[in-house]
Image (tube, rainbow, N blue to C red; front, side, top):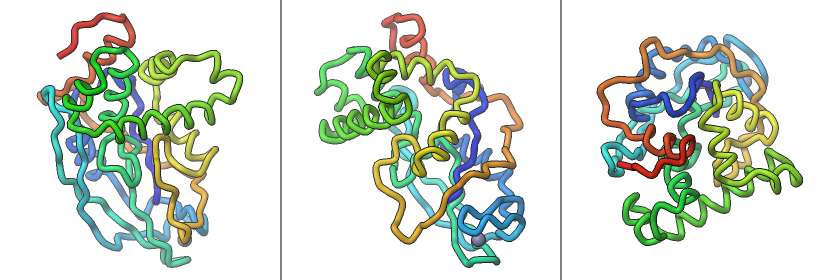
Length: 231
Ligand SMILES: [Zn+2]
């Protein structure tokens, strides 16, 4: 797996869905310019295959399931294959990073009962608690024990939302711990690698404020201003 940085703006400024972002991202990917996380060779990767996966977002006030096509490349030098994934996709998870953060944000703001929240996002309470456990674990890992005690869940999410470049955090998490933020499954045992090269970066070539009815801003407004007007 090769994680790619793509979130170079504040999260609340993104007003289009993950699948649309993914398509923009894929148009720029050049496997031959990537570095193999296994053998560290650069310029040795090329297209191996494509595969489909689901990506669930929260669009227009409801969960929407999209299908996206992921590129897997192969390294001529060591033979390892790697899916190329932008950082708004959580490995081994059908839900987008934005979706999970939104669920957690509404939970931390106590906007709904657990039952209402699960119904709103079409998730089970088991799934919600799994994400909460993962969030708390990764937050503690990232901040360290003492700082973790000092910063609330809401405060940490607010900090992520306000970051100028969220990718600095997501790639830093991968560099430090070997797995992605909010990734619940460990990488396969045969995937012995350590990604420390993330360049080249692919910048989206158009403003991320398309016509999609994407509702991140409402939750982010809530985190920043504590308003309780949500769509
Ligand atoms: Zn290699």
